[in-house]
Image 1 (spheres, rainbow, N blue to C red):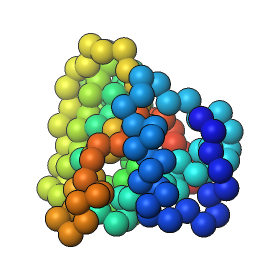
Image 2 (cartoon, one colour):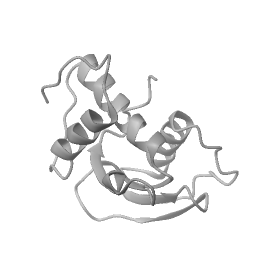
Image 3 (cartoon, rainbow, N blue to C red):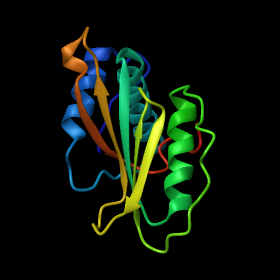
Length: 142
């Protein structure tokens, strides 16, 4: 991933960056600058949209819940009170709906690991879309 200075990233620039990087098989963030710009772009789009759905594919329930907490904290959402790991010994898919503040958890048989964020806006349709695949730990150090 090659990115430019993120100091003055506009919403349009953020959307272009996210659309360019979305739906790739694997998004590798190799530098701190890339991570910072990707995080900033996603946060700009999330803050401009009305609500989001977050899809997480992880190796374990614990890993999925950790990613969810990191993303929700960064997006300034309250954490659901029922984030208790359930015993599952397989990879999992977790889907979170920020409009209802609920999540769904199930087993996952695919190879992908990461996060998809689907943004919705009735006021600015250019924001509507699914972005990612983002690293599980994109916001771990934010």
